[in-house]
Image (tube, rainbow over all chains, first blue to last red):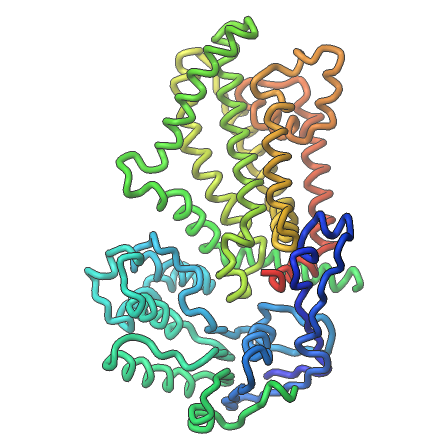
Length: 219
Length: 265
């Protein structure tokens, strides 16, 4: 499912002169090149695995998720990644606050590449999961509370099927009742998905949910 | 990196235009309309402000240049509407990666899909602005033949393809270098005055050859020609096709950067 050998990835210069056209042309102050996030990464995952990623802040958990999802490219290495992976790092990605709830659902379906004929079922299913109701979904997203926005984002993430699900922290949304419902849905989603990778600081959660844990600091 | 790998990467990015057809078409339309939907007239507000500008400036400049209004008004109106489309697309594409940062860094959606979204938005606004031409054409009895419509469609397709490749290159440069966006905005702004929109190409006299080196002149010419005709249409198409080919080749050469720009966001 996932095979990464000798993977290399680094971020570009972090200081302003390294990002400025003037700085580049005049070469007044040297760019600060950060050390590579991964210089010799070996990472493998098979079908049926639920892998937990642990590590300190800045160790590269989220970057690794993005690399596996294919959002960020490896610079070197022998890489084989799943074709259809869903990276749920920011569940509210791309939602315009000027959209109504219904429009936000449609917009998300488009950004997931859902085919035109499947849009309506996608929207209806997500609306049902969000439990926001027809009236509230007709309002602008900017009128929603943070919790309601999270519910909207969560519901959309739960509808799409992926070969590999990548989670940055356990999704915990809404009030106490909804949290319980969301948690059961997420567990169900994890069961149905062939391969799941969860990045979290919670050791208890990783021990409870995952089949094995990887310390990103040691990679 | 071999050419083969570059071509595969490039094709993969371009193919997303088909996979995410709904995203760039519908979200581009949303972008054009949502901003104005709480207003009575919607995006027509842009049309109204532009028609006011065209009306006032046509009267003023036709007097200054001593040109008959019936010759100047259609020329200036089509030029300005086309310019709004071209300049708007370039500036919005340059800013696209940064404006849709959340989408770029949290999904695999390629820069071509994001740029296509901005082209759709600009095109929807352009179509609204084209309404200004209806009373002008009726009043000045400008004839629109089926051939004009074919030429107009051709010009829109050519410019959209050019903007797709050019916009993607500009977007990744703007994402990489923070001051690039300001540079492009300044170039586009200055180009308005050196491109024959307010004035006629022959007014440059013996320096008319300078138009040959202005890419915006050729873009405006192919958009104006369907309605007003042009002696240099074939020549301008040749320039535009060459620009498309150049940007297409640059997109292949920099195909790796079209993916790795996300590291900068």
